[in-house]
Image 1 (spheres, rainbow, N blue to C red):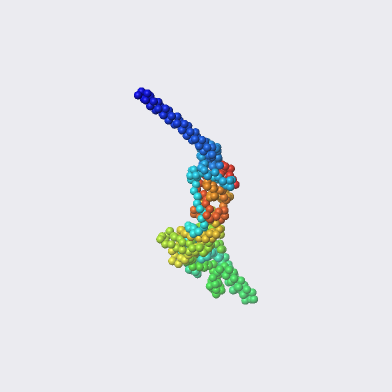
Image 2: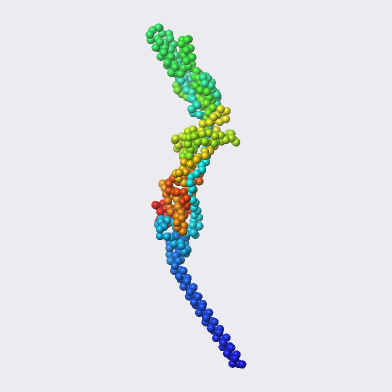
Length: 416
């Protein structure tokens, strides 16, 4: 009985020892196999920097350029040998850190809204300057203030003129001269002198009839309209040809707007302009551009845009403020260029550049490209050369991509 128990005990002990030895052996094999797999994986991996993907090392560590921790490249991230040497390659992590956004280049279409500011001005073609035809003193002035309405032929002022009196005396002397062959020539010469002084024919005929000279002359209005400028007072002495009054016919006036030079390519003669006036709220008026000033104002960098409008009721008054809008068609640029956002453009002084995404590479790859910009839009530019419709460009984060290119010595906005 005791011998049977001893045999059973020995059997259990031997079985336990055998199990322990087998477990140790399997553990050693697993550890050995796992270590080999890790070594194999580590040996085949390539480590790179998320901000400087051109850095590639066989083991983990720090980036020699920016000091960031290197990350293991995923299978298939190794760039192809055909990639442009000046291309900037970013990992997905770097792309997210730089907040890079892209957009597809679109064609030019639609219209552009141009906002204009201006005021009402008298029509200069219907404006006359009343000048003194003879030197003298304003004996009587019939116009009291700016805004007075005058009719053509109305007496504006009476001028006392010793010069006129002398010219009239020459006519009287010619009339009183003895009859001779030269008398008619003297009379004609004296009459012509008075006529050149713009003395009315009725006054000349009166001198011939009465044979008496007068030092007074009446200044008649040469047009009908409103006095918009008064440059003389009663009792003033004036010179020959000196302007006294400005008279404007306000039946037709000008709406003159100021357009910035960047908007001028979109504005042309005959274009429709819609505008409102602060003094006439709730009403919208329309007119067509009749003139675009060929010279820019050097101080404001604007050019005048003129719209001629009817003002028979006198609602529009000079200096009245206006706000206008022009819907400029972009059709003229439809066949010449494409539109890109303003945020996509990097300025280098003389050059304008953008970053174009290369869709051939699996890893995000960007190439610098110089473009020729056309007219400016509210949120973008028309590109006349350098891009084609359908290409993908960087619209946000372009500076981060350019900084990576500069650090790596590649073509950038500062070096090309």
